[in-house]
Image 1 (cartoon, rainbow, N blue to C red):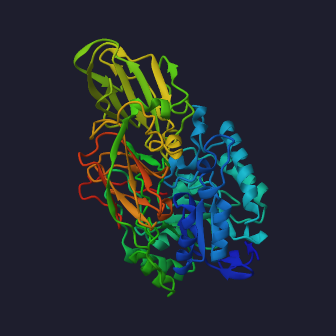
Image 2 (image 1 turned 180 degrees about the vertical axis):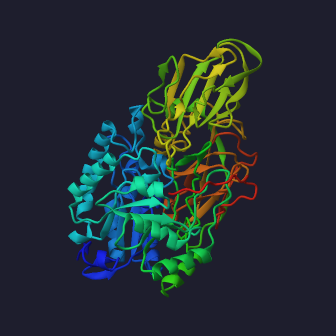
Image 3 (image 1 turned 60 degrees about the horizontal axis):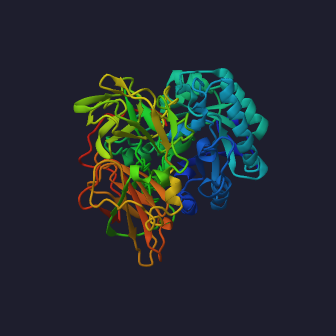
Length: 613
C-alpha cells in the first residue's frame, strides 16, 4: 500500500491511498499521558467512535531525560503503541517534534539543553542542531519500518510544531529539519507543517516541500480558515490538524468547556467539504509526575495535573456526551462500556519533615556554593531541591527576605530552624518576613512547577536563579541538596524505612513541607479511582511508588487526581505517600471517589488567553 502525493493530490484536492481518494478523521491521543496498559482500550474506543486515524506527539524529553540515555520501554514503548494502533485498524499521523508544545514540560525539549545558558532553542543554533541531529538519528530509524509505504500505519509526519508562532522564524532551521527527515524517512514520505490561523504564523511556519496545514477551533469561520490554508497551499486536500474539542486548564482557571453541539456541527461541516480533520484532543489523559508544562504571557501560569481537555473521552478514558455526539456525526457504531471506580476513605499518618530526611532523599550530600546554583547547574531537572544557609545576624523583628530579580523559579518554601515561615512565588510573591538568631539554619525548598512550553520564554531555568536578600545582607555560603524523592519512594521508602527512622515521626499536621503516608486495601478489586485531598493545600502524591502528579485544591480548578486501576494491587495494601508543602488539614484524611471533580466552585477565575497547542 502507499500514500501518494501525485495526480489526485493536486487534481481533486484530496489525499490518495492505495490509488483511491482518501480522507482521514483522526483524534489526538498522547501515549505519554496514558499508562501503557490502557493504550489498547483507548485506541479501541477511538476506532469504535468511527475514527480511521490517530495523531501522536513524541516528547523528546520523555525518551531522553538524561543526555545520551534513551528509554523506549513500558509507558515509553512507542513502537508497542504503533503496533496496538495497527492491530486496532488505525492509521497514525506522527508528530516527532523536536518541539511539540502540547502543554508538556518545556514543549518536549529536554531541560539538559539549558546547560548551554545562551542556547537559541528552535533555531539553527549549532549546539541545538547537534542535539536534534543525535536524537533524530535515534528516533527516525525506528519509525521507518512503521511508514505506510513500508507496510506500517504512519501515513504522514509533521516537521517541528506550529513553528510560525515562535519568534525566531528561522527558515534555515526548518530547511535543516526537512533534509534530516527526508534522509531518515525517504523522499516519498508525506511531510507536513501545522500552524495557527494567522498570516504571520503561516508565513513563518511553512516551507516548500512540506504540506502546509492549519489548525483552528469552534470560534472560527471554517471557509475563511481554509481559504488561508489555500493561499499557502494552492492545491491539495484541506486539512485541520488541530480541531479543538476542548482546552487546557492552568491552576486558578475555571475548568475549560467547549460546547458539544458546536464541535459536532463543525466537524460535520468540515468532513462534508472533503476536509481531513484531526480532533485535538480525543482523549487528553494526565500529566503524571512533573511532566506538566506552563504558559508565560504576563506571568508564569502552570498547567494542572489533569489534561482532561474537556475531550470526547474523559481523563479516565470514559465516553462523554461529546463522544456520542461525534460518533453520531461520523456514523453509528457499537456501544462503549464504563468501568466502575473504587470508593473509600483513609487517614494518612504523618511521617517526617523534609529536613529530617536528607540522608534518605539526598544520599550524596550537598554541593557547597557561595551563591545559589540552578537546577540545571546541579544536573537535576525536575521536582524539588533544597537550599540551606545560616542567618548572618540576629533578627528580633520581622525582616524582609526578598527575591529582587524575581529569581525564584517557581515556588520556595522557607523555614528557619525547621519552623515554616512562609513562601516566595515567581511573579506574584517576591517578599516575605523572617525572624531568628544569628547562625539559625535557613532552609529554602524550591519547587519546579513545570517549564514554559509555548512562546519565547521556553528557555525556562529552575531553582534560585539570583541572590536572595535578607534585610541589607545578600545570603551566601549555600549548601544545595539535589533531592531524589521519586527514587526513594520508588524503592519502597517511607514504608520500608520505618524501623530504622531515627527521629520520631511528627504527630498531627504541621506547617511547611511534611511527608504523610497511608495504605489503601481494595478487597480484591483494582479499578480506576479518583483521589480527593479535601482541605489539603498543595503538594505531590505517589501510589505504590508512582508519581500521580501535583494537587492544589486551594487554587483549583482540579480537585481530584486520576488513579488508573492497574496501579493498585487487588491483594496487597497499596502505599500512598503525600508530600504536603504548606499545610495538611487536622483530619489528614484523603478520599477515593468514583468520579472526577475538575471544576472547583471556589476557584478564582483568570482570563485564559487563546493560543495554539
